[in-house]
Length: 207
Image 1 (cartoon, rainbow, N blue to C red):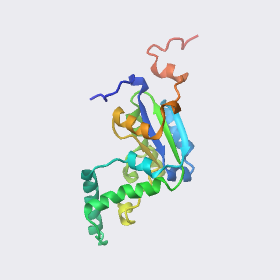
Image 2: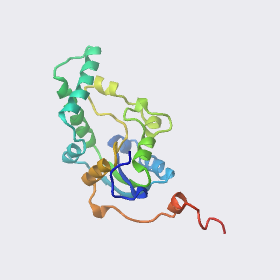
Image 3: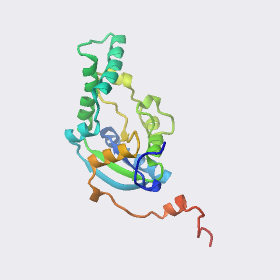
Image 4: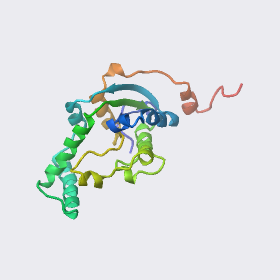
């Protein structure tokens, strides 16, 4: 099913955040180059200190989500014979609390990428949320090895998985973009390589 959007398919956009661990490990250039090489276009970027308000708006979850995730943590802790001092839903809320603490611990690179199927393309390059299950060749699979299991063992700390990318359709991408960027911060411009990527007949390729 095609995403609901008014943008031309070649002009779809998605949000990417290089998280504090990606910045601290000096992987900003490597991450950006992965997306550039596939052909999507960078249309906005800034280096910022994130606010708690931005994080809570971005990671907007409901009680059903908190309960589902918290139940998983609760069961993991039971298996490991760790203390069970909260209800499952509170362990779920702790996930976002930990993410907020993590995301505000240092600067973040916020970016908007544009191109055909850009949400799916960026998700594919990024890899699974849980790095230990990310394929070799993805950013998370190649550069980190954290896991949900380790996060649970270490008192529900946030996953150190280098970056965030939109996990949804264009509607979700636009919701996230609006949290991090003003319309005037997005640059509309043309790349020469777009002629190769999108020109059906490659007109003018031969001299």
